[in-house]
Every structure is written in structure tokens, then in C-alpha cells.
Length: 377
Image 1: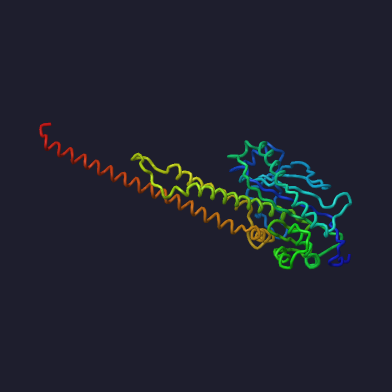
Image 2: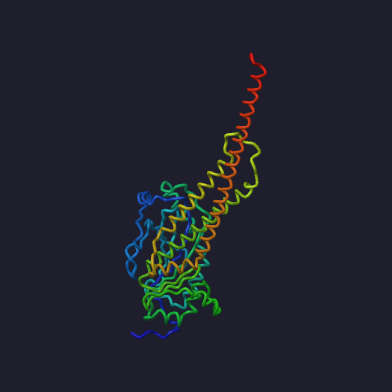
């Protein structure tokens, strides 16, 4: 079969789907074992060994997937909703719509319009309602349940096959403008600089597959797309957790801003000033470190492998190194506050001990003088 003419406006998507992810934080920790007993959920499928992914390239704690039924939130597009529940307290709500159904196909040229329609629909409120309902059902499995106001969304457009065979380089060369518009949720012609920026993260393994990763959307041209999609979903959840940790640290630091310059006016000699603040800071450092470790270890990607390349490229687009640096810097501030308060407590206690010793010496001197002046007493 001949490859179709590059740049044709009649190129059709025979099989594909649009996916919208919304990540939420609903608590400190979720027992997936309890979730399995409460819901009709199943562990997520393990990553395949295709494209040189070794068997140790797997989830550290396999999340659970639960179907939430069908949705009609897009006009004329029937879709499905499912929830992926992670042990570190996060949940990802995924909306999925097939691009071609009942013999009807979508032209690639129409995909920018569809992406804009999907983005403009603003599904966050609908997704939050799904999470609130799910949270009520699995509340016994959640440690310290509390739904965060933060949400992180991400969109993926999957093309499994075209009406004619097309290699990745030909797709980029002939349809780069259209692909960039899809990634930017725009139907207007983009500038060359904006186009290049949108298409800068392009990854291929075979000559007929392609992944384009941008800051808020990706395009996957591959019939074997599931592993790549799972990595993007997980990274969107990791971004949410990074934002959540950063916001929590900001909040705590502001709470302690007025604490450092103040000295306790008077405390009992054996009491510990700032006891509550010191305990809170110590607990915050431990919880943040544990959460960061669980999130970072949720998926092991080692070596120069295909999924590792996808993960690395998406991390860069999501500014994950910047978020990590911000969290590390604020943890250092928390550590400095903790050290400041403990040093102040140690100094205060040392001063109090010195005062007590001086008082005891004065009492002993007074008693000695009294006994000398009153020998018969």
C-alpha cells in the first residue's frame, strides 16, 4: 500500500481516542487492600516488556482502577470515566472518548477543533464531583481524609491508525502545524516559534510511532499506547503531589514567620517552650519526606529506555525539577526553623539550670551563715 500524500487534508483517524486526566489528593494514605474489598476495582495492568522494558520496570505499589460508568459531558461524544487510586493518597479521574465510532471517522484536520472544545468544556467541577462521591465510598480506607482544593489536568490524544499508513517523520513533516494546534488547544495558525516549541519533545521507537509531549497535552501515535499513557497519567499525579506538598510547606512556613523573633516572657523552669511548634515541625519534615519518597518510588524507570525517555521528557515539560527544587528549599527552611527552636529551647533550659544552681548555692550559703550566727539553733 502506498503512503498517502504528505499534507493531505483528507487524512482520517480510523482508530483513536481522546483522554482527559484530572488528579486530586484526598488524604495522607489509601489502603488499596481495603479499596479492593469496598469497590469492584482491579489492580492496574503491569507495564509490558515491549520496547526493551525489563521486568523490574513496574509500579512499586500497583494502583487500583475502578470504572465510574459512562459520560455525556461532550456533545455527540459518548465517553467513559474511570478512577485510578494510588496508595499515597491521590486519585486520577480519566475521561475517555473514542474518536471514531459506528463507521464514522475524524479527520486529523478536525482534531484541533476537538481539542479546543474539550479544553473549553472545563470538566474540573464534574471531575471533582466524581472524586467526592468516590471518597465517601472508600473513606474507611483513607488515612486522614481531606480533599485538596488543588487539581491537575492533562490531555492526551491517541491515534492508533490512520486511513493510510504514515511514518512518524512524514507525520511530523506534513502535519506539524496541525499537531502543534492540537497540543495548544488552538485552531488558529501558530507562529513558527510557537510551533517549534510545541513539537520540541518528540520521541519515537519504531518508524511508525511517535509521542509529542507538551506542558498540558500530548499526542500518541502508536497502536501500543497503553504504557506510555500510564506513565503520563502517573506523572500528572506526581505533579499534583508536588504542588500539594509545596502549598502545604508554604502554609506552614507562613504560620511560623512571626515565631522566630519572639522569646517566651516566662515559662516554668522545667517546661519546654515551643513544644507544640517543635513537634509540628518534626512531624511535617517526616511526613513530607515519606510522601516524597512514596511518590518518587511509585514507578521505577531505570536506564536509557523508551518509557524512561518519555518520563524524562514529560518531567521536563511539567517543570518537575523546578518543583522538586522548591520543595527541597522549603524543607530546608523548615529544618532551619526546627533547629532554631530546638537551639532556643536548649539555651533557655541551660539558662534556667544555671539560675537554679545559683539559687541553690545562695540557699546553701544562707543556711551556713545562719548556722554560724545561731550556733545553738
